[in-house]
Length: 612
Image (cartoon, rainbow, N blue to C red; front, top):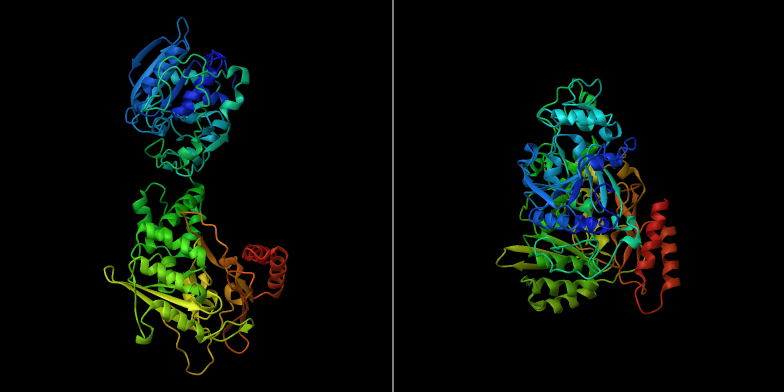
């Protein structure tokens, strides 16, 4: 930057770059990242700056204040005609060095950069990061033209820079790779883009960061000071512009040609010619096509390449949406409150609605089924009634919900010990007259996880907690479409609910690792775990602290120990004695009689699981 900016002006220049979210692109960034290129006035004589809309006047005013008095409006380059609306070239007196500013149609500078007519111009310097959109070409000192023929002066420039330049990859004797003219690329996630993080303000020597009060009022459009700047930065003002986040979350697609004439642009596609590549389709079309894939095929598609990986995970974030799942029952504000209630009470969603979530089915009218420890049932029911749901009375003697909840609590007592047979689960029903929706609150005297492990079918063992959704037997449920009947005693006692497309098995499918493995824990490697987005909630209860064992010796059953302790707020099921003993020991060491010790128990138990 030395030929263009004095030492005193450098600090304010990068301040402008950060404040306006602008970027330097073109030969200066290319010369910076190309280690074999010498930077001097003979090689690089122009700085190209892309600026967001409504910031061009601020930039011209600033450049005038640091000596670029000669300013002329020039035609916007043809390659930028659909991305920018104005271009100004600024020069110092008696100097042939210039700074060219092109203003974008949008609040992002990416349309300017990605519409460049040559790949070398797609190297970028911002105040926080340096980007190379074609890093392999940059490393090889190669320039490829974009759509139109390369201008003659560009070819002469590249000859002086000792670079390989070509209008396309037609005559390449190797695969195009990232430079394939016919391949659409996208900015979301920045796949294939080289990124280097740096802090421009730490590079500038401290003595050259002159600090003084601002002399003009702040501009409403740009957030920077209008008028003369000189070598001063406003007091206490250091913009924090994260260019990587800005670029990686943007929604732009680009390519550098209409088609590829290289005979072998993607040799690896010969091995997967039956795979549909979606990188050139809009998101709505992606969703339609990817929604037709079952979960296993979806994950296989994600492993094809970095592009399909980014596409698939972007689709997963949209498809597995907890707000979309709960929207038939609650408003968006109520959904946030419901998830906080889950975190506070350990309440989990299961049943048909949880299965629909994993299968990405549209809302089928299924009721919302939640499972919770009975000690929290009163608070849970009260919240549902505050959200407009009415308690459905089943016994006239228990017409009030609190009375019904209190009376039901005496029907059983949770006890520590080994549980192998079905447990009692109490049901409270709530109904919303206007929405025509049912909510089933099922309460358990011990742990809510007990009710899940005592379902009569492995295909129904899917849960949604406050922070994640977990399917216990995903391979059997979603891939081979088989479900194991739990608590099957032989004979004609098969009462397992049958869903269309599933084969009900009474003999364990030992060919499946998730069935064959004796010890299992919630969220282990054999589970399908989907983190839920939204607000990060701090909670004592974590479903990962629960585990169980398979016992198929006489009949199909789940074996576990119910962990009850006065030091803990919640109850857990434990299938590993060492984990339970280690967790209880940690709990005793840290318990001070004031707060619950769930956190200490859970942390130790989860660490033991990971070591197994």
